[in-house]
Amino acid sequence: MWKRLFASRAFYLVLLALMVGAFLATQVRIEETDPRPMGTPADIARLAERDDLNIVFILIDTLRADRLGAYAYERDTSPVLDAMAADGLRFGYHMSQSSWTKCSMASMWTAHYPVRTGVTRSEHAISPEAKMPAEILQEAGYKTYALWRNAWVGPSFGFSQGFEVYHSPRPSRLPPSVRREKPTVGVAGTDWDIMQSARDFLLTHDEEKFLLYLHLMDVHQYVYDEDTALFGTTYSDIYDNSIRWVDRLLGVLVEDLNRRGLRDKTLIVVASDHGEAFGEHGREGHARDVYSEVVTTPLIISFPFRLPEPLVVNEPSENVDLWPTLLDLLGMPGIEGADGRSLRGEIEAAAAGTETGADAEARFAHIDQSWGRKKVESQPMVAVTEGPYRLVFRTAGRGARRAELYEYATDRLESRRVDADQPDVRQHMVELVRSYLNETPASWGDAPEIELDEAQLQQLRALGYEIE
Ligand SMILES: [Zn+2]
Image (cartoon, protein in one colour):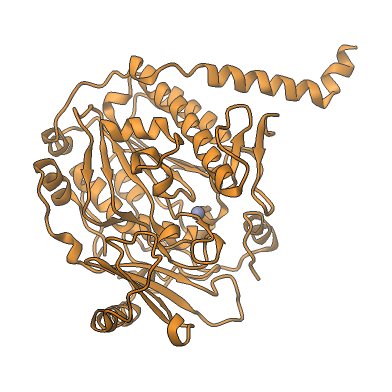
């Protein structure tokens, strides 16, 4: 009888369910165990003087900012992230550099725009010559450890530079109540696998200074827990349910940091590589255009101390600024030749209740619309944001669809074109895009091209993309 029981699939599913139950039951009210002292915005400037700080960098793939409570969403999708923002720092007007993971992440890590990294097509990789934040931190004595599940940030594309360990955890089977509703094929496992590995890492490394990068995929895969789902059954609802599920997993990690006495010496940074469309401009998903719904992402920093009230930077910021800002806050050298810059000035201005006037700078998002089609020439689509305006420009477009102007400051979902009212602004912004497209590559030169083997292609197709 025992033999039969051990051989049955149901037995293991029940066992797994009990393990997950026990795991989630470890969640207690986080604030009860929060060991962080109270601080003030002046303590942010003093972070650079400390030499005991860890960084937990959490990348939630495919997370739209406007689906989080902290960004004024009406649904309760993200209590843990909201709590981090409530006594930390939130960038309220933040954008990613692309709507496709690899292109966007290459820009985030190198602080260079896509046109300068050159990582815009499926065969491109980050140059080994590029100086990556993990390398800078490793040279400064940090233990650098990454856990990832998205093959677009795999080591073959150059993303492991500077990481001592760059590991994709072995996928476990989905617990019975956890569903994956991504309409296309899916990657195995869930973010629970990453969280388990992260907890193992914390167990063995709490004496050393570390950078821990977790690249979570359950929002991308529409994974959620049926037993605790709060919202409906449309894709948009399920997307919200998956944010709720991932937020809960983050709660377990935060609680772990609290219990291990690490929270008061750790910066927790939460960002995303792109958003997700639900038909706003005729498309679902991401990785095909650069309208605001696919490039407006959150950026939240939880400090090793609690601020008495939320600090919000409402001036524009973008993912190329992320690492220049973090390195600056830590008192470390920056990234040479970067397009992004430290947002320290914006943070200090927000704390003082003033502004720097930085929204006059042009900012760019970029996707090659034929990135996965080997035999088709590049078709860059670029959006430029400057002042109150945003222009979406298709190099492959014709007529009225070629350049669309929106008054982004008052129309964040880009629902009403203003080209006809503002022909001069439109023309000026078209010129900004043209000069962007003529930028010279980064100091390390063109992006190397790699040959993807069949196994890699299958892995990437499992994410739901068509690649030739
Ligand atoms: Zn992605």
